[in-house]
Amino acid sequence: KLIDHYFYDEAAYDYHDGGYVPLEIPDVPQQKLNVPSLLKPDKETDTDMYYTITAQTGEVQLMPGEKTKTWGYNAPLLGQTVVFKKGKTIHVHLVNHLPEVTTFHWHGLVIPGPIEDGGCHAPVYPGEEKDISFKINQPAAFVWLHAHPCPSTAEQVWHGLACGAIIQDEHEAQMPLPRNYGVDDIPIILQDRRFHEHNQWDYRADYDPDGVMGPTPMINGTINPYFDVTTQKVRLRFLDGANRREWRLHFSDDLPFTQIAGDLSLLPHPVKMTKLMITCAERQEIVVDFGQYKPGDVVTLYSDDTPLVHFRIHEFAPDHTTIPTTLYNTPDPKVDADLPVHHVTLDGMDESVAMNGKKFQMQRIDYQMEIGQVQLWDILNTNDKPGMIHPYHMHGCHFTVVSRNGHQPNPNELGLKDTIVVNPQEHVVIKVWFPVPGVFMYHCHIIEHEDGGMMAQIKVVDPSDPNKQYKLMDHHT
Ligand code: C2O
Ligand code: CU
Ligand code: CU
Image (tube, rainbow, N blue to C red; front, side):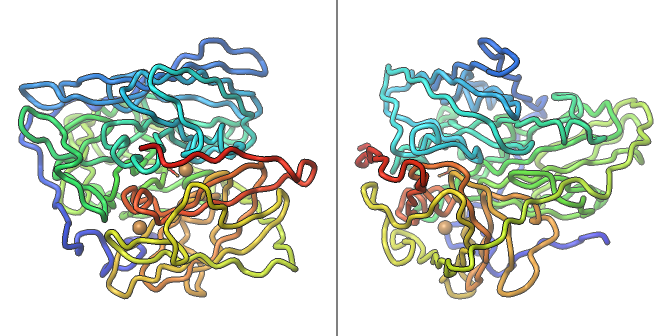
């Protein structure tokens, strides 16, 4: 069956918001899509990988005229793509060359918190260097690294601190799927910016407590990009790295494509579609088959009516591979019978955002679970209809989606997730279990809502070390 509509409440789409900034077609010549290079490990053995990640300032020729001042990881803007191999222990040397405190949050990695996870309790001060290590024990997926110093996560991500990371495993490696990075396997990081005088960004000037937006689409840090297609099939790893914007993706000619993965795993079964909505922090992976086109043709990826990427078709060899009908067996642990459903409410808009009626506090633990426990969480968006959609995210775990207002989840959200869209007045029930200990945050991933206090934190206890203490920071201001 072909999915030809976006899931979710049209009445709550971002373009209904009073502060909505429509996308505009950038008035600049097309430029080659920046495909971030793969970050070279400092060293790799059969069991360990070593990386250095430096948060730095830079400038980039994004628009004709003056360069834009930006931030990035081992790059002037965004970052080089990190590769993690399942089963290996990763050692990361973190370096802060920025003029202010930052943190290095691995969004989607199931690793201990709060230090390795890199949320707001793991500051790295200007000029400081720190070392962390963790083991990768989760399936192949596309995750990301972003800054998370509360309450300036949104501003630092806007400056450019966001970067993709690919987890590889043997199961995915055996699938007949494109994975030649840079050729037929491409990250597509979707962001939007407003260019002010001298081509600079000005977060404060653009501030909106419901999420900052800009009119210019920026894809992998490229304005008005094209990509040279040299294979019949191309895998696109979409990441919504925008502070606020949802992207309603579709191609010219209503070209069908196949979704193969969500946030944290392959989907159990591929989903054929012509339309795909992605909201803040989510990842969706698709395979596009350009078999019906010939050299010289151009296929365009749009969000609503705005072109995002122009795929220029070149000569390619015919590809007769088919995507297997079963890709992944999503784990489905049994819920602990003695644990009642845990309720989370996402409340309000603007400055009044909260979670369960409370604003986030760095020193307050809002909930506790043990490693190994499995519980249903009911996430409710208390906004009246038509209000905003909240993309709900959890650190330190992967979860599955059980139901939406009592109905089946959408077919493209049946793998492991870390972020899930919740419509106004909707209850989304998810199954939650934590494999690693620590203090972790969970929050709305409209980043200004997160900074504004629609966030809480959980302590996950390891029963073999139940009294472990964690140092919780204050707001870094
Ligand atoms: Cu993408 Cu709290 O993180
Ligand atoms: Cu996260
Ligand atoms: Cu929100």
